[in-house]
Amino acid sequence: MSKYLNLLKNLRENILVVIAGSHRHDQLNRLIAVSHTLANSFLASKTTAGTLASTYGMSTSDLAYDCIADLFQKDADGNYIQLLSYFKGLPITTAKQEEVLAHLRRLVFSKVNQGIYRLYSEADPSLAKIIRNIKIAVNVLKNYDEVEKFGESSLVPSACNPLEHLPPIDKDLLEQRISAITTGRELVPELMAKLSLYLREQNEHCRVIPIVTVAILFRSIYNCRQDLPNQVVMEDVELIASDTSATIKNVCEDIKNKNQIKYVGEGKISEEMFEKYFIVLEEELREKFIGKNGHDFSLYESLKKLSPDLTKEDYKKNHRNKIEYLLKQVNKEAVKRLKDV
Image (cartoon, rainbow, N blue to C red; front, side):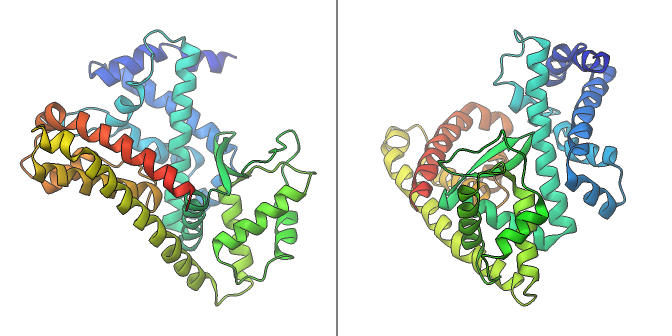
């Protein structure tokens, strides 16, 4: 209880002064310490943490610092941009300390999950590719829902009872059952379909499974056929990513045509800049649905690459609201169309 109260101490005040840029050194250190405590305890609950710690020769505490490091990176103006972007949309000035802690916990857990995927990508490229393909398939095929269970990104077959009151299935048992109904020649979407069918038909275990567990399962199946993993991974990426890319391109073109008169015709923005907006928006959607899921993607930095003279002040004053509004439109339409692919 005392540890919990210690996390709450002055938390709201420390967050507010840090995102306002008026903090003292001890207030920043306090916020880092609370974030690290949350990240460290979350990592300690994950079976994957031990593997990563061993691979990198780091303690769980060091891994926790690595995962939250991006939260405390400053932009060119000295702002902690990720903290600012996250908390500016939350009513933390009026929220209770417990609610503020819950918001921070969600942010930290998200960064830990991102960090785990990143570290796997560096330490275990073959598993990272399978994880990536699983995420692409989920976005495109929509036969699973991505949920958060105990702060970990997980999958559950769509439109069925998740049976969360039941115990999780043993990994060895799961591998035994899925291996019995697969050949090792399936692409990732086919494996996911077979896994979904098995999960739906069984009623003894929880149907929610962490994405990393699914990826490890699929790699175990592929390892039975050493000649297949790289071929399957590459074919799968090309097949699904190609369809997704075409959908994204069509969405951006349609939304651009829909808004042409409103923005260019009415003189709110030049035609050249309007075209650049949609180059950036298409890039953002590709990152989200095909690449790194849009983590740390900066509209400003991407637009500045196309317009080197663009300043942060000019962007905030003349472009940010417009491009963010258009982003909402293309993102909403992309999600809708990808469900129907």
